[in-house]
Image (cartoon, rainbow, N blue to C red; front, side, top):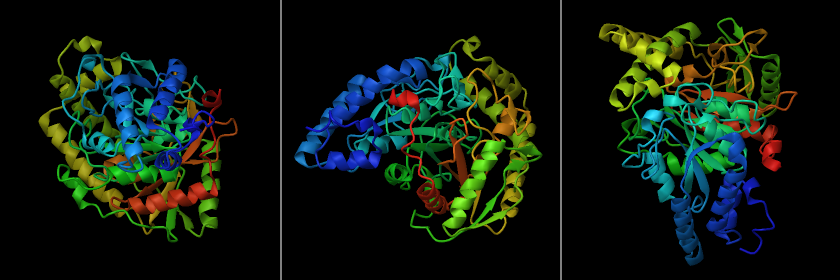
Length: 471
């Protein structure tokens, strides 16, 4: 491991680290220690982690080093540090779901994604912050306080996977897992200059964890700095599993790099994205057109107002159900969650069933209105990262900002069970990252991945780092 000290391995992606581990140029022990050192230096500013497993990670690194020396590595992820969002189950680590009610909860087993990471030899260094019940567009809670964006600590990294993106964007770990029920992977990735994937429902199997806030809207989210690193992580996590029947309905991933017909839009229901986001989108369209794809403007296939109403009812009922199962003093809940509980508790059975019926109608209509395109290219968020002290951007597209407008491109993907992929695009003139989202219908994840690689090749941004990470 002679050249480790001379190389900043934290700046290397997972694929580059895998290659160095394979030829013995770096040790898993060194990688974990470097990860903990960066966390110790940067996390007091960023607040990305809610729990660190120093003892467990160091023991796992030592075992990975033994396999490295004996030539029995389990695969390319063996010995690579990763982080896992606090609402996912990792046996032996707290899963607090951003709530004081769960500050002492330790799940009895891994969810499938954590199980697969461990089987592949990846080293889970700790759990990353999330707002309470993972139900906020920024990452703030009474449990952990406010998580900040490595590009500017005055800004939010987004939510609810804010800690996950901060951990990767600051070079604390090269890979992270989060979740996405309404944009919680794609939006934070767009705020922090990362690749972020919300695969089709079942693409990353899951079976054990907290109750869902909105039926089947939530999926495991994957974060990396490049498409190659995302491909590596997905290759470990994406195989079907009988414990998640939905995962057995999807076609396998294969090469889908041929020319595509791509629809696009930059506004929904009278709301428009910011000018800088629209300019970034135009640049991404041009890049994909130059790569041989056909770009056509289309109308949004979904009703934003109907989606917002469905989301409000389903998440209120989900929050009430979840809180009812939790012990402890409910006065510890945030005002936002307390309000959701009151609303959810007042929803009658017939009203809830009618909402589920309306969701099925939303899905039928949106699917029918998709049109004759293979994919959609749309912004991941209507504006870049905003002040961490605000509930929403001050303005969006020249109008007063709201999280409904900010998230207008995200939540419908979850309602449909579709695949959405954020890829870094032309940044804002002030340097803030901007991400573009590639959306495909359920099962067509390989098409999104192929287009993501094409966009990344045309506009490579993986080596663009925030000053905080470089300081």
